[in-house]
Length: 431
View 1 (spheres, rainbow, N blue to C red):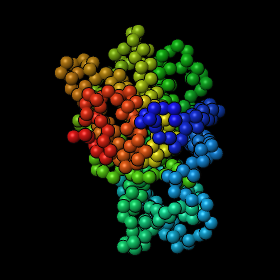
View 2: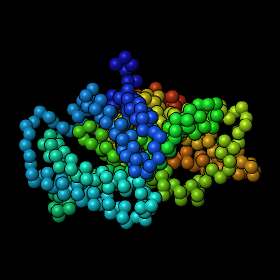
View 3: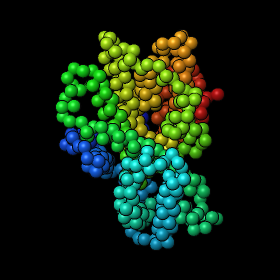
View 4: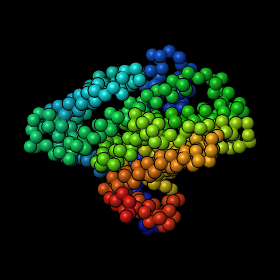
């Protein structure tokens, strides 16, 4: 490499140009499909938009990067093909029982009522027949080529057929944690994505043109909608497509209670409780109300879009590998060349500009209180960052990446001033 020794970064499992090609295909298909009003047509259009992103990325990664040959896939294609019916059958049992747990999770919890998540359950109804159709050949083929074929599905099959003494429980727990993560986050992301799709697809060409007619509010709203849609698109695909052949499978899922606690509290329904009870920093007017009609209005709005752009820029390098609470490959390109947590930095700074908690009508005391509450949210994201680092530091590639970032990150000065923030493999804080 051309970089100084100790400053070089491990190679990312995917490449930005490939992922940007997925964004370009999405935007092209979005333009071709709009305007669209019919509910059934909107649902089909949403599927096409998902496919327009993930298919080009998978094809390009397979053809150009040959990700199926990455050591992390544990696939050995030089071995002769043969079928182990007993092991495959156990894996299929494990898969079916895992899906039943997945369905039972939604059935038992009142949060997932069919009204609030109707689009998601319609999507599952369309997806599951195809999922089961391809599962048998996929498992048969991969079972033959896996270096260690006794994976999470195999362990689940052993467990659910009563062979408890043969179960590798750490592998089974990791398997179940991975599916629980998918079960929790996928409906939230898919619902948000379909809502955004519906808004974008319902807009006419005149609506898009109006956003560039000189009305900054319209421009800001469209840009914000597009940014969050691209983010949710990659996030949703990431939760859906955990596929070993494409090297997008889950290597490990967060094993600690603290890691789960701080992550889940940033999402509904947990965030609704935390924000209304303890962290309600948005009780006053936002930036648009404070700055409307002033010359600072477009400048402030552009600053927010830049920060949100950094947040989305930090999602795109994952390709089809994004997922909270999991390790699916160490990302070192895009904004991760400059900062270990660009998404958290971007959106936490954006929240200060959007909500302006330091500006309130009532009193200075209220301004201080609301600012402290937003600071509390920032602390939650700091804990998320540190628990993620602790989890990922079991991978030597992440340790190499984090140690290099101690020298090249734009925030390297912070660790020098406050040793608490210096990276230590396997530790939450350096205390």
